[in-house]
Structures are given as structure tokens and as C-alpha cells.
Length: 618
Image 1 (cartoon, one colour):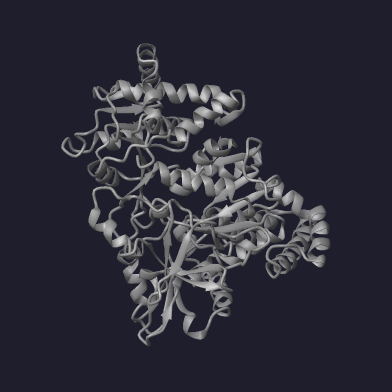
Image 2 (image 1 turned 90 degrees about the vertical axis):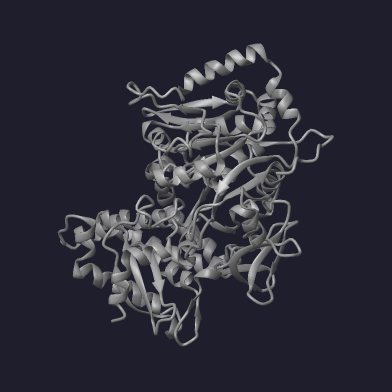
């Protein structure tokens, strides 16, 4: 890698931003975490002290400029502290998903060669300890924060987090300005993180993001206030829930980078499985979620409605009808209330919406967004109807997750909004591929210059791999990934994601994969939403034991057939799903059917369920 040009002006980094908050607002709450049922707070003074101590700890371990520090952990304060500490000493943070199986950990170790590896607990430490010595040769120290299970471990590379911090304090006592000197020497082109892509079609690639990339993303998230109702950007009074893996660039932007950029407090959910409970406790003011979470919240409303008393069910039914009318009115008016919807919302809010939002944990939410994958417009319309407008946005790891967003009052449902100010966005004249050009475009793939070259056009535009179209000349609609477009045996081009998202708009459907490339008609593999369908089964006196047992019930097939019929009615005949099969198991990242970001691995699905697919065509 070429040595970056030296800047004469101090470079702003996420670490220097954190230091700035500690100087300006030392008592302001930066982070909260729940431990044994009690929420513990870190103010900015405490947060920066721990960042600085961890940075000195890294220096004591010999971490130098450009060295990699891997973090393999659930979201927790130590993730943020070590990330910012790494940037402070001009190292490179490499995040691993907590669900990465040992084989993926081995691949990533071999690819990025980290010097320090943060393994949250015994389970994560075992993964790196089991990697062969040659592949893991770069790893000089393995940090862990949960001591349970390590009593009999003797590997000299292992170090408890508290001992690491003590080492850092000792180093700071002897080298007081070492971290400050490195921060002052930071350059705009320094690589500050490697973000590994989800690897839907091959091994993950490490996208290199620089300080310039991060600052561009922070500027758009904080200063593009026209996207937020009321026009007020994030600030110190805001509360954010952190629950999606921090190695995902979108979560890093909405959590860590927003925190250091604008000062909102990060509140760590206990886990992604408890996020719905933690939302109710925290009642965040800003909330980002991937479609899977919005779909889960949407489904939870229906579960609660079905479990209610007869009297409450009546209110619930009325509320749903009102939400539908309000949502349609607002959709037709750019997300703004009409005279009718304003009156109906006042009634609905009094009767049911307020309680519904309280239960969802979104009562105080003033801005919410969905990204990282496509979401069914029906889900967005529902939340718009109950007073929680969800702004769909678009980006990818390779452009720092910054490209387009829907603006307040200018929402066009089914689109990912308008390009942010200062962003170049065009559609390829031949393929319709979305291409971007701005300071957020990544530096390249780690150790893969050939793959980097394949990602940029000759005139320097990033090729996203997504097909799009302009709507009214202002908004972008993402059609699908180029590689996912189905071409039937009759030569018809079909976007499977639109059909899949329509199916997943039902609270009874968790996963859907449409098949039809080279076939005479479309079919689908469908995974049921276990909780919702299970609740439906109990309501209908249908006994079951396991997921597989439930999915094999003829009554459940009939239920899903109704959803398929409803979806087919929305599409042209050639886009209708003629046959479907229910997947007999819940899909898992560990089993290879999903990426770490919960996207379907289509080739793996075909390998796993190929016989089911072929049975629909024989």
C-alpha cells in the first residue's frame, strides 16, 4: 500500500471526535449497558479515559501504524472502546460477526493478519485458538472480557481485559503523550477499518475505509437534516439503541460514528434477540433497523392483537383499519398528513396508536430508518399509519453506506429516496446499474487489487451491482441485484426481490426465495415466522411440537397459500408464484444458508433444498 500524503492540518478522526466530547461535555452520558438487570452509565470523561487507556494498551502490545486489531464480539462498550482506541493509534479495526463460524474466522485471520484479537468470551476465543498456527501466526495477543471458562487455559497469548487496561495505565504513566502524538499525526487517507462484505456469492472481501470516508459519512448523517421531520439532526439529547453487529458499516454509522459526531447516548441492547424488550425500556429517539427487525416488530403487533381480549381486539381491529387509511393518505402526500389523515390519526392515537408505540418502544422516536436490504412497502405504510414514519435509505459497504435517503415530506414509497447533497449518482445506460462517485467511496479491497479494479469504472465511478431506475426524475428505485435478476425460459426479466418482499410483508412469512431462472414458471421456497404461525396454530387448536412439524401441517400450507394468492394478485401473471414449498427448518448463518447480515445465500439454498425445488418442476 502506498504511504499516504502528509497533511499539514490536523486530521479529524472518530477518535479525535470522542476526545472533543470529553473536553466539552465530560459529564454527558456517552454509553449505557445493562448488566444483571441494572443499567450502568459511562459519561464522556470516563469513556475517553478508557479509550486512551486501551490505546496505550495497544501500544504496549506493539501495535503500530497500519496494524490490524480484530474484534469478535457481540455489541458491548468494549467493542466501541477498542475500536476508537485502535483508530487513535492509527491502527485498523477489523470487525467479525459474533455468529461467524470457525471456518470464516480462519479465513478472515488469514486474509487480514491481525496482531491483536479481541475475543469476547470462551466461545469466541476457542475459534481463534483452533485455527492452525500458520494462519494465526500474526496473532500475538488474544484479549477476552468474560473470564468464565478460562481457568484451565494456558495459551500465553490470552489476556484478560482488565489486565490489558492495567498494562495501558502503566504505559500511559511512562509515555503520557504517545497516544496524543499519534492522533496528531493521523492522515485523511489512513485506513481506519476493514469492513468485510457479507459474501453472498463467494469469500468475504475486506473493504478498506479511510478517515476521509468516515468523515464524509458522519457529515451526511449529522448535517443532512432535511431527511428528519422537524429538521433537527441528532444531538446529545438523543437516545440510540445499539444491537445490530457493529462490524456492519450501517450500524457503525448509526451508533459509534453518530455518537462521536453528534453526541447521542448509545444504549446497548442485551442481545439482538432481546431488542424488542430493550426498546420498550429505552424508548429511543432515533432508531435504525434492517428490514428483518421492522418485519419482526410488525409481526409482534399482530401477535399481541390476536392474544388480546375480545374488547381489546375490537380496538385493535379499528386501529388497523385507521392505520391503513392514514398510511395510504400519507403515502400519496409524500409522507405528510392530509386533512383527513390528521383527524383520523388524532382519533387513532388516542384509541390505540399511543399504546401500540409504547409497546413497540417507539413512542419517543422522532426519526427511524430502514436500510441494508429491501423492505416491503406494506410494512413501511403500516408504520407510517401509526405515526412512526420509517425512512428507507440506500448505500453499501463500498460507499460507506451513503448514497440516497428519503427526505421528510418528500417520501416516495417503494424508492430509496434522493441522493444526498454532494453525491454523484448515475445509472448505466446499458444495464441500469446504480453507480456512485463521492468521498465516501472506499479505498479498495484488502489484498485484492484485481477485485477493486472490477468495482470501479474507467472514469472512477463505483459500480454497486444493483439495478435501479429513476422515479419522477428525483428518487431512485432499486430493482434488484444484477446477479439476482431472473430470466425465464420465455425470456422475461423478473426481479425476485419485489415478489419476495411482498410475501414477507405478511407477519406469517419470515423468509422467501423466488426461483425461476431458465424455468417455465416461478416457484418459491418459503420459511414461516415460527412465533406468529405458532400463535395462529394455538388460536386455531392446531397442536404441534417443532418448527418442522408445524411447517408440515396441511393447515399451515393452506394459510401460506392464501398469502401467495394475495401476493400474486399484485403482480403480472408472468410474475406469479405458481408453486411453493415450505422450508422444513429455520435458516441459520451457522448452517450456511444466511450471511452474517441475514441475507439469503441463494446458491447455498439451492444446494441445501435442491430436491424441494426440483419437486416443483417435475
